[in-house]
Length: 347
Length: 271
Image 1 (tube, rainbow over the protein chains, first blue to last red):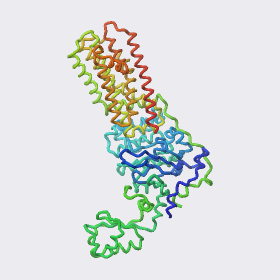
Image 2: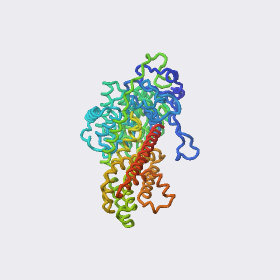
Image 3: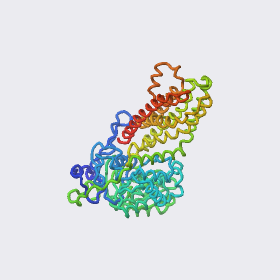
Image 4: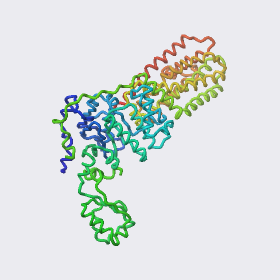
């Protein structure tokens, strides 16, 4: 893959988005050439220009898929999502959701999608059940309907036990789950979830993803998920767009992205104290491994990895070795190979 | 091809589909009722201590002013009792609502409402109505205690049932505007506090001792007309036409300030 392959996503044809109002069957979101610039922050120091949070983003989300935006903090994911939800007006470019132009009619977004933002301050002082019910009413449901849907969703997510407690008094994960419950009351064909499972325990995470799956199977709901969690991205996403520095640097299935680094494997070595540099294989490895404290990581071909494993699991090297793992490439490896900045993704 | 370098095919794609139907938007009154109910429920969790503070502050002022103002049927006593009572409205509706909207805006909580199909007026009026309601018990307590301390007739305390909603509308609208337009949360808090201090100084101090420029300021403050209306009802034979006139001013200012608050909300949520 050449550099131009990667950096040329903005060459997208615009005819459709700018011209006819129709959308292709099966298409949920169409984003074309989205640019959003923030003025230079006050704390940014002299000479810092405006920040291009979104720098020509183009992507398509199909109906019924779980589509992910993966990238480190500050990559521009939330900015993109805020434009999709009508909260933020782009400088240029177009956003079409289920055939509606939400740049021209931002108020329509609320009638097409449900949004889970990162903040819960509007709901913090309400009880879980009232938060869900009120959100349903504000989503246009009648009182009885909102109440029964809220009760159903709380049961589905296993929140009945804390239905009477205020959100502010819950743990971070529980509060997040309660906000997610509010998102589900008053059904919408598109759910936009900004890091929905932050702080959740595995039980709560599972509740979220089964609720999403159920809605997908029964109503063909589309999910646009913002995450920086690679494991989650690999397991729940149908397709993923990797966002870095305001651009989409790749977009494919998690498997497709991993195929970019196919053939390579990752060898992680953890030394007890110091690495035994007197062993020739280890000394050689020291030059090419990515070293963080006692942990060394090296990406290499399976044959070489086999030799390395053989070298470090015998003699003095093995005595100095605390742990080692040999793994097939993850989405994180793909992301790094694509040129994303290091270290921003949660494992 | 795994990358976006070739964006999804646009020429040979499936046939165009019609735009999806929009879900119905929430209507003004049901949404207002839902916001009002939620805000009242919030008070259980968050606001009760501050409601006590609002009342105690006014009771404290009554005690303090009792030392310098004679009890009985005189204009100064009327003003002190009426001013302290309406101060509870100013504390909660102006100061606390300004802080609430300021915090909501600063923390991104407004996004929650902005991504729901709810009319701006429902959110603003629901919150304003709830904050005005919170003030009623404190206002009644302050007025009753004040009437007793200053030996004033308590027969017309019912007029508070008009003064509180009308002054409440005017002050909560103002509070919401401050909270929603302040560029930073601290400024929203500052504006709310200043508004309340103005209501305190200009509402409680007897009019005849204030210099002319301060009186002009006093005339500009919407809470003044609530104070005046209430103060008039303590006299032996109240001038009901004047009371109605003052309340009408409150209502007018209330309409304007709530309309301004609705616009401010729209401005704060569409960036």
